[in-house]
Length: 360
Length: 170
Image (cartoon, rainbow over all chains, first blue to last red):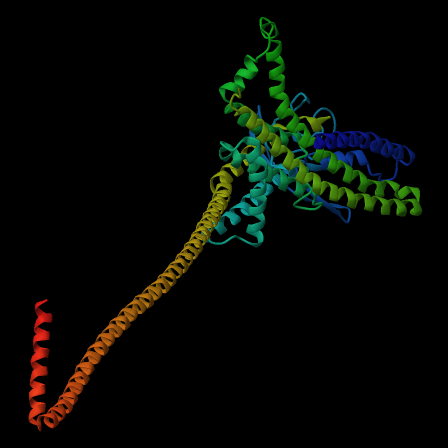
């Protein structure tokens, strides 16, 4: 229950922040329209959201951005592949541009002959995709290099130390303390690879998200598409291998007949439960990580927002913000682990429930 | 809020990347690590079991040793007791034999003494007879020197002999 509470708290805070900060920013905007104001809300959502190029820093008034490939499919003109620099900062390339406003804000749109903006099928390698690839490669190399140790050594004769020992400790911790009791002694071996992959994928993504500079800093697990795929994997693992007893509990539970026939009340409820489980997984991870990013970014923005209020306030606020920032970063380290742990544990519990034999 | 709308492109890539990562790690990564750790833990368990068995064997050996020692001690005690008994028996036997022998010797000595006494008595008797004979001879010779004496003696002798014969007949 604790992580849920934390999730709720984070959600509340991020809602508050996203309401208050843009307000402040827009007020400031009204005061001095000439100044190059920092639009905190814009900055915040820009960092939390996805982008076509990987913006690293601003240096001497110039954007330092890693260009990434855009891959789009247009109904009229077919497949297109180009670098993100071609469409950034209001440029247009073969009718494609990044929408400044409207429904498809910050997304590549195709402007048709009639001036209407159409969203093409877009599988660009965005910042998040790039970070995902990096996470995947990092995870594979970490685990495979640890696994390589076991190929070179006789593991029954000696125990690994150093890096391999760390990986082994983490893997066995998740395997023995989390997956095994949750899924059940009999079948946990079958599901352990998926659950371990999910755990480490989320954990490394979360940690990389906390790192404020390239190649970290992308809000990967705080993106609903990523958590949706992870939750879908658990959904598939739960329902594809659910046993007879599991389906009977959903389709014909042990309740008085009028509750399930002719109006399938119980079945409807169970079906909602079926969807609610992965949905809660998806939202919990997304909201926690997104809120953490928003909190830290919001705190950092306070420094820039208070510049106008004079050096005294700005200086004291900077100190306070720094302290809070350090605290938040430590908290996020904890959250990075806890959320990976919770996601894996709940997935394991759901799988264990679907594989449970009928107890009399 | 487009934060809550999943992007199709990101969905696609996440699916692809996660699938690749999952297949690589599920095939070459995690099972290797967990399998090896399980093997090691099995081996540790086996070693512990073997150690336990060995310890038990040592305990058994100790028990056997103690039993053997106890048995030996009992045997020794028994032997000692037996030896003491034997000694006493032998001593007793020897004493009995000695007593018997002594008795026998005493008996023999007594008999010998008796015999010796008899012989001595016989000897003395003979000596006495001889001496008396000699004395008698001398007396007789003195008495016989006269004719009257000779006659008297003959009478007395005849008297004696008849007396003697009467005694024998009666």
